[in-house]
Image (cartoon, rainbow, N blue to C red):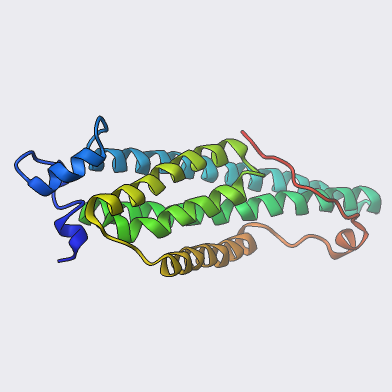
Length: 223
């Protein structure tokens, strides 16, 4: 069994008759038990995950409405209006892609936190989770700012778990390995999001895209 299992989370409830838990408890003085804090963080992540799922559904419906207008304009030979609608669809789909990727990545984060909650290997397993939450926050802030703000706070909580676990047990984690795993999680989420986009969003009329003007910047899609 690893030092972490003998140290930081051998006893999730921090029973007073365990000297090592007393040592850890001093690191969390006046704080709730570690398992309680982790459960709270997991709950907050699921709330944000649900917000992203709802936002993705709204974006898909919004795109469907605009796409219908684009097709109707195309059939009426109103190329200027068709191009306008096609361009708006493209913008909505950019935001939808980011939202889907972040939603999928949060699903993996939640699964990892459930594993940590069950087996208690905080310092080793939490580091890539904190990195993923930070990456998601950076991506989603321009689309749904309130989710980005909440993820920033959750990320700080997770980072504190990692640091305090290391201080309490003397355990360390491989930063390079942690970053590589975080990148892998984001890449997998991106690949799945690409497939979801193909399944959920029909191709735009080629002629509308050809005449669609380029726009810069990203719009916010808050609830």
